[in-house]
Length: 279
Image (tube, rainbow, N blue to C red; front, side):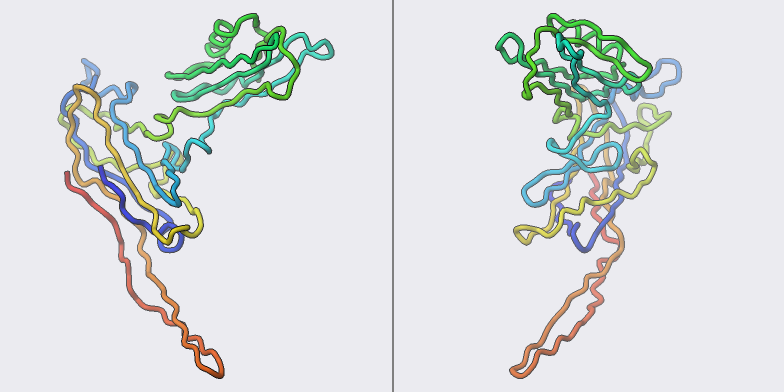
């Protein structure tokens, strides 16, 4: 763990690089023929967080920052009715977008005077067809409502038409906090240099710009490495490396008759600043 590194993300730094050296020893499943580690089991997870103005943001696998309030899923939902009768509530979602591990869906509605809440959490990559089957199995008195090339839908009967009916989507806290790391063609006892990059392939990670600090303090950067039961690996040279930058100061001199402002640029270079921990 690298804890509470102060970083000025408002003025001085806007981007950084993240990496570490990694050697797996025990507790990693692998292909018996090739010896390559099976990364589909997500054996290596890290968490990169930035604390600023009493709020914690987490880096996701796409290279963006989110938290419990802003995390979204790819899948999209809408509610509707079978018009004009309104005999059932329609829950419509895309037939081309998968549900990812950590996605959550909550379907809530008023039926026969009682509010029903039906929460769903997806632990594995799930097709729209599989999700529809699960919805139908777990929501009583519902059935598939048609199908199209672009959507899936279920109808829920005996629902009252009230504004409190809703579908809410989000992510589990673990999926918000943690990133799955993989290294192609890596075997047990191999040494790999890991440089984080988002899905777009850019290794430079933009820092979140959240404006000025409310308490005058810099943000705090953290990185955590997680070890599963029975697992053992070696880490070294874990680093945050920030862009080269200079600090600029302004001083002013006031007199009785008039105010003269002198601007001075002090070449106090932050150089190619970074933090490296040898574990």
